[in-house]
Length: 357
Image 1: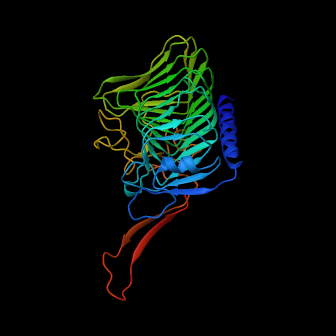
Image 2: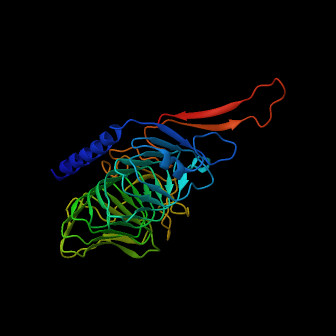
């Protein structure tokens, strides 16, 4: 019954976010800062400033970051991918400012996500398929309601402050050492894969329940016995349901901490291999490598093998996670090869790959 309730709430929040975005009229803008290319804008902030609520902005791949941006209207901003070599779209810090309600951001490499700290009320914000390198900080002075993080790689801390409600964090790879939650109203935290090498710490500073479900916690720290730290700091409770822990170093272990207000349900499995399809303990880029907190989008395949003890849970349950952060629902075309030179009246040979995503 608990799993049914969580999934029902999750579906409601996702449908609400998507329907709210579709309610606006939409104009499409393109941004490309590469030399000798054609687009509506070369500067992403200029495109945001010129756009109207409900518009769509496509951010083309570039070796040069598009820099820090402030979003102050309801937009859909879509990159090519968050890490696919020559097809990566990168920005610096994203500030969510007054007017940013009904914003969706997809397929970008992002430094960090913060509020503009001006006591605004911002609702219905979603982040899909991004690589967030330096943290998420929301709800300290601005008020947020209905916030979704899905299909992202999150490499640094998550801090959700008091002025936040209805937050869903699901189907992400989380490589952070610590997560801090101060909010008191409806946090759904499920189907994530954790990969911090020395074990993550999750801290509940609220007086309410923090439910962690259907997630996999991995570590790999030179044979040390690792603790996935659960801590109540505000008088609330933490419940862990249908999760699994595993340490990739052969002589190590990974266990949830226990204490006042912490409930580890009987369906939790500790020190059990999740049986990912492919990880490499000898690769410095892999989520399974000793002493690193990384993820290799080329060689790490975190789908679950037949016979996995958590076959119905994990990263891909209910979502098509993309290793390179190619935005779901938007077709992509790559040029895989082309003729280096073409003689006069000769034929140009081009090989392309198209995906529906």
